[in-house]
Length: 401
Image (cartoon, rainbow, N blue to C red; front, side, top):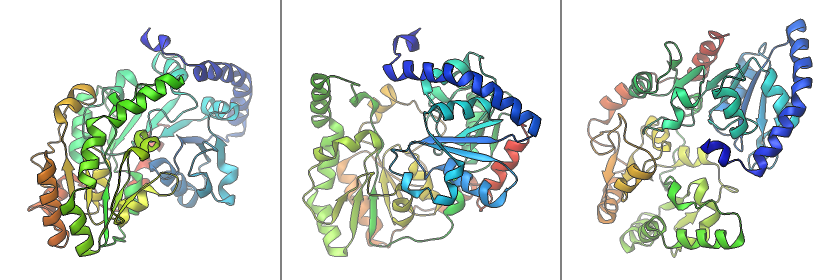
């Protein structure tokens, strides 16, 4: 009932698109069955750099007999990445054609829970049993917290793929998926992280968003209130304090390092709220910078609770978890899970501004050193550490056909 009350105009539009797609989908499904031209559909909406796009490219190159299509929004900043030879396998996201292919596909694949024509309408179709297609969740990153929206009762996904061994055990035990529905394969994009292209002059600050800051307003008055709410938030205040710290700026100048500040997508439209005074600090717009390239090139990542930390840790580079609002984050966003940010040897931990500056100085001054016992914990965390993540993913999907 709560979801029905939250129906938006866009959801109503997609109900109409869904209804328009039903008859063409039935006809196309019969055609696919008769001609044995079945296919898989990968959807990621606004991104062409996540696990879905990596897996899409793998299938086209290594599994050429497997028909596959990729749905992406034409307005996506990543649309330009789609080469001409791939265009015949591209479906415009959220269109009638996307709905038809979504209803007909043997397998629907995404790295995002909402990577489908419309999240609200598809939720009703999938979770309430109206649509019994086989859906595969590649994940956006390593699950470090306890997002209840990914529990089986809220997804009914046929295959949930995990990226780290402790994560696999946690999801298997706590998310309510039936036997055989959770597999440990590694993230598809990890296949691309074994070539070291780190730049010793690059440091990356990439915090996640705070859901409670978005008031989800629509009118000019509501949007103005949201901007004011964010401008006065602890989130903006603390990162402005960090980015303008005299010790940090002095370190960057002295060592000739650059700090790239890439706010979460939820904060991207509020970049003007971050007051940067040093030329050594670059605020990154998602329109101009590729997240994966920033992660691969950085020599040190500073984040908070974000799963992007695991990409950098996977590459055996230092990470600092700076958590100034842990209690509020746990109360209003995600509860804790198996991963202990404070005690892990995979990264440094700080809950204060001063300590964060001290750790940055230490790591940079010691040639980007990781924690003691890092290698031992890394080996146990990433038991699968190779370039066969896409291959394992492919065979696990084949097993559910």
